[in-house]
Image (cartoon, rainbow, N blue to C red):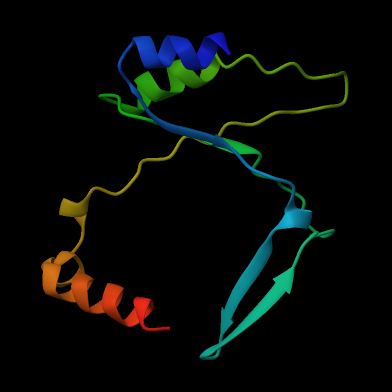
Length: 113
């Protein structure tokens, strides 16, 4: 797709993916200290995330400018929406969240499952 190629050529494209239908997914819900797993499809879904781009730009305004160029074709009663949001940087988190010892301990416990 030309739009993706343009972002790559501009050096701003970090990642992009399209997402499979919700019928191939699951939801993990956390409530009152318990988890519940629900298999898709999710009929009650009013909004659907079909994919995403992660771009590295200098400002929200630049991200919005790129989003406005996305080649979405919609019919008379259809709508396509791009939500522009900033991704957290590791520097945004407290030290204990990114402490390598903590990361190693979590990874080790996950590999023992």
